[in-house]
Every structure is written in C-alpha cells, then in structure tokens.
Image (cartoon, rainbow over all chains, first blue to last red; front, side):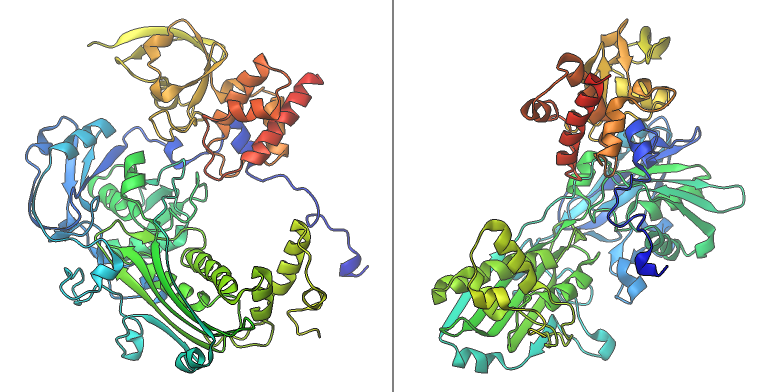
Length: 450
Length: 158
C-alpha cells in the first residue's frame, strides 16, 4: 500500500480537542487556579503620569501595613535594563524592569511590593509616595519626530535606529525598488491618502499572571500563562543573571492571549521576589492593569502616494508609515520590518519606496497582536486600491486582477513570489458572493497560465 | 465587623463556613474551598466567567456576598459533572468544539443549564439572549450556540 492509499486518520476527520474534556468539566488548571499555603502576593507601584523624573520613593508608610514583607526597586534587579528581542539580535537594551531615574508612560512599573495577602499588597502600594517631577510628554508619532519634541531615548532620537549592525544609522526600515519618481512622471493619476489605526486591547478573559516558587534544589519553578514560554524563560534568566537551567517554566494553558501574553513583564520580577523572600510569589494583573498598563496593538499612521495609469496599472507606490511603539520597543522594531515587507500589498508594482518608522511616544507600549503591523498595512492597502479604482473609474475587482502579483515576480523587498494565490482567492470569492467576472479574469492564474 | 458562620448547600453537600463581611461566593468557592472551575475573569460583574447557580438561577459569584445566600443551594461546574462521565451539556460543548481557551466555558455551561431547565427547546434568539452576560474573547460564539441547540436535543431525547 502506498502512502497515498493509506486511510487518513486526522485529515478530513473531526478530531476532538485534547484539552476539551478539561475545559468542559472545569478541570483545566490555569495559573490563577494554583496556590501554595506560604504564597506571597506582589503588586506594583505604577507611574501616575506619562513622563516624569523620579526624585525619590518613600516606602515608610507602606512598610507599616500589616502583612508587608518587602519592597523591590531597580537596585534589586541584577540586569534591570533589557529589550525583549535581544534574543533575535535587536538592540540596544532600553526598557527597565523597574523604572530608574524616570518614567516614560502612565502605568509604568516603578516599585514592587510583596505582602502576605493581595489586600495587604494593594494597601501598601497605595501608601508608597512617589516624588515625581513631571516632564513634557509627546503622544503623537509625527509630533514626536518634529524638532523640539521631548527626546525619550538616551541615544537622542524618538525613533529606533535600523541597520546599526551594518554601521548605518537609518531612522526607518527602508525598501527601495525601481524608481518611484520615474513611475510618478509616467502616471496619469496620482492618488494620495493617509490612513490611521488605533490601539486595541487584547482583553483576555484571564489576565496576565504567574507564580514563581523556590524549590529545595535551588531552582525556581514558574507557573505562567505566557504565550512564549522559552522566550520568557531566556529573558528572565538574562535579567536575573542566572543560568537558564536554574529556571523551570511550566505553562501552555492560556486563558486567552491573542499576542498580549508574549511580552516578558510579570515573570522576571516575580521570580526575583521568590528568590529574595524564599516564598512562592504570585504576580497577576488586575483587570485595570491588563487594560491600562499591558501592551496593546500598536497604532499606525500610513501615508500613501501612488502613480496610476488610465488603464489601471499602478506604476509607483511610495509609503511612509509610523508605528506608535509607545514608550519602549517590546516587539515593535520587528513589527516595522514585517510592515515594510508587506505594505506594498500583493500587487506587482515596478517602482516602490517604503519608509517605516518605529516611533517612541509617552503612551503605554504596544506589541504583538494577531498579524500586528501587517493587518494595518492590509487595511490601508485595500482601501487605497478602492480609491484607485474610483479615481481611474474602474471596477474594484478589475483593478486588483490587473495588478495582482504572480509566481516568479520579484517583490519590492527582494523576495521572489513562489506561492501566490491572490487571483485564485479572488475568483473563488467572486463566485461565493455571486459577482460575475469577465472571461479574462476567470481564466487568469497566479502561475501565468502554466 | 466580625466574621460570622454561614450555612448553605454546595454541590449537594451541606457546609458551614466562616465568612468575613462582604466576602464573595467567588472567593469562598475558589480560595477557601478549592473549587476552581468557577473563574475569576474581571471581578466586576462584566465577564460571566464566575457564574454559579443559586437555587438553579445563574448568578455572578464575584458580586455575590456569601451571607446573602445563607441556606440556599449553590452549584458550581464541579457539582454539575456526573461522577461517571459528562452532563449532556458538557458532551455537546465538547463535541461541537464550543471551547477554545476554555476560560469562559464553566460560566457558559451553567448559564445554559439554567436556560434549558426553564426552556427545554429554546430558539436561536433565546439562546443568544441567555448568553449575553458571558464573554468569550476567543469569539467562539457560533459553535457555542450550536452546542446549546445540540444539548437541548440531547436532553429532550433522554
């Protein structure tokens, strides 16, 4: 019997979920369902303002709360300043685990309080006095790049510097393909538009959290609902300057993530608190912290200029995009690269120029969320395609068939198209919605008809 | 104010517990008694993940003081699950893929139990209406609605 003749056990079959029985009986164990008798609770002192210099922190009243165990500041964190994507070579380090001399967004972690009960920890947090000197803040990506804007980064700019690994100082992720000026000159129409998307909270039903538990052999077991277990383990080890094997991360059960649980926020500080107190320590966000302090989907502003001929061919596309990273990198430098590779859309355009900026503002950091950086690109590209169709006076289906990319073509970021399906997807979609296509488009193929 | 002793029936067992003033049923079942099927999603009455049945009616346990339900019958998902398998609603949720992350599932199932007890053959509209207080951020509402229809058929066939 050949492989092709063997019966399929999974493909085409309905297979029940492995975790389904746990879910329908309520026996699935989430982090919040775990507790230990000697467990301590960690709560965070957060910045009440978007940008300020920290002159001092006074714990004296907090220490008087019954059940108070200890406070932690940046001085307790072995390698306090980090950047999550250091694991894939992104630098420099720029986010403090706990704020040092300044805060950069409202809700930023300033000091941790560990107490015997959650109530005691919250009470102690409310009694910590922060001596802050407010600084001018910037909340808009284009404002942040203007002369005179408050500069947020030690290296002197409000943008991430790309290509430093090649000794370059590029303020944007650049894509250059053909000659856009030549394309604009040959075009019959110029279509310009600005697009804007907003931050979106993931709002998982289970908030972000973990419990770090010291073991008799000196290791720390961390029960966490992270979406990125080993990524988080590695970053935690780097921040705490301990060997990786000293940490044992237990996870995989996530009560909703959607990209909101890939940053490394609760684990390093809970693990440190467990090491310093010798007790299991729980650090989980309240609903308010999840909404106001955790990373959101990033906001984007995208400015398009397209040169188009009377018969609907796009000859040139120039895009300038700004990602609002908020106060820190998190995953945004990587997101911008993804964006730059995709914002020209699944179309064959001979002349393309893209500049995508990772911009810092005094807003809560943004990070991963379902197709982040590409979803806003698709939104802008497709609205722009409709606008082009309207300008040229063509059917919006037609404009996409005329410009659809096909196998063997080079995309602007120098990747050859190998798996194009746009034409076939549009043909299937037209059939589903009952849209009659002309015979030419029905016969069209991503493989040039081979 | 001092703590006081409250008696009630939880999952068919009569219990006496010491409760602080305004301590919620959510805290009682999860933290004091270890019945963790009842979830703590928002702790402000917004998500429905903490739903329990009180004398058969769904209530959000995060907003419900224990002292208010003295003497009454409380059911969590642990109490609905038969010792020898699954309740027909659980079977229907399992087989219709009405779970994704699973965090909203206990609350959903208890709300559906209350619905089917008072209306054994609900319309789609009535099913949707009964689930409006229960949030599924994985947005798996369609299979959940299908599972409720399927559960109704299973229970009516028995």
